[in-house]
Image 1 (cartoon, rainbow, N blue to C red):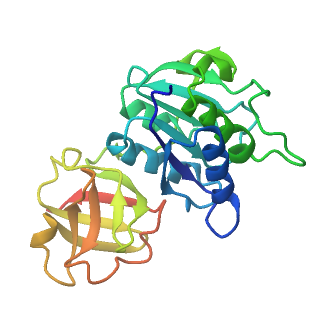
Image 2: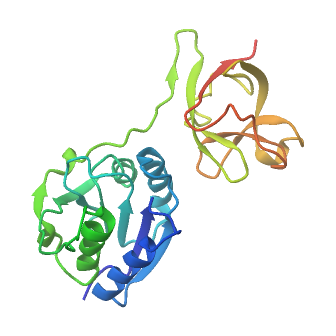
Length: 266
């Protein structure tokens, strides 16, 4: 009997066609009693960084079990299954940088296997569909009680391709260069910095982006006045540029990937 009671899915296949239904059908056929959780299927196509960030944000809260991750192409490398948390969970997906950040968040991998055993794969009548033909059958095999080593060749977990997650940097003049890594449904712009990163700048900060320059306060979300732009704590421990009462979105220039400079207000 399998030790894995859940399969959590993160993909870029969308829900406008048959793809998610096919994945669920494959998983059900191989392991009918396993619960399937659809975390998200609407990562933008091939946006590996967005998928990696979502997995990294989510993995501390996921039920132990199997994670089916499929964003982007295989980029010439076999898909991979990575065991974490002393075998309590296994993440399966392309080895294209999608899994690296999540694996690091949970303390690293104890075992990794490339999905090279084609006997477990689904045969494709045309071009290989990684999620349908390789990753889902491998997940189903594990969910049904199959061994991790059945999937293919064991490899050094340290060879897992790392996620390309942007890091903030401190400039020579003490300013912090950051980047917008996510826009929330409420329109706020999440940065790749936390309070500790800005600890030397004080609570009043000059925010520079594009041709714009604003003076903002570092505040708790409940303390921001309506219409006021501020730096606030978010639910993941990072700082977000937002407006009071979430009544409107922040400037359009603060799109994902936008560079933001934060300076001490003097």
